[in-house]
Length: 299
Image (cartoon, rainbow, N blue to C red; front, top):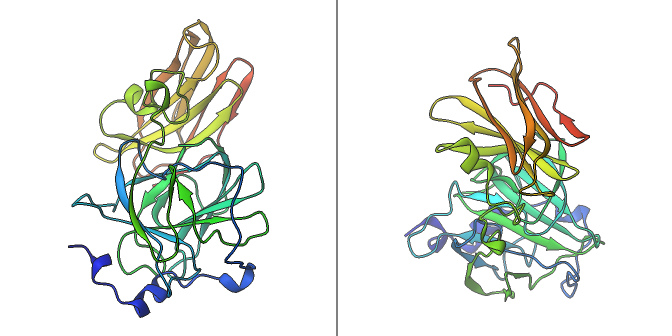
């Protein structure tokens, strides 16, 4: 079986030795108002382990393997909408981690990520289900898992967090099946009214590494590790099925920009280009709402 079944309590503390002293803690605090989904793709089941008494901070969840399904490398998604902030603690504590601040002031944290869709210091608006990174073992982790927290607006821990309708109290370990992105039958967690997803538009082998919100849609940057190609697509979330102005573009540094623009019902793109070991500028528009990135995602 995988490492979590063999781990000893002392090691657990080392794995998630977080900077708890900087944030007040209250075991009785409860996150209210915002409803959270599982941080994984629709239909995925993983164990939610609320360690006791040695997990730090108390009430945080370690998402681990379930029935032979490995969590390592799984895409991590926002459990609720908000603004995501990206951090890198290096080889200690959280490692690569994301905090999402929600509309009611509460927060969620996602730690030990192998990768993030934006670099440390970046931020972005996210919907429930927006991809923010991938499960790994960075920082103080001794094996791959997702460290997850729900906190109040004041920073106190919810010691019995609820995800996808399952409450996991201190000392409990429960399998949770994700319904994140299952709504609407579209398979698109950030845009259930649109039958297409960025991955479907760009094709097999592409995964979202970044995105930006637009009024009436979202533009996405994807990467195919197999061939070194980037792909950009802009998905509509309003006037779906009606022909309205939408565009997508991709510009490897030092090369000509490739653009797809027109009146489309569902999305613009895909625009693809080989950009291995290159910085790229990318973006798109829906109507008059537009986004242009700096040159980024180099290498």
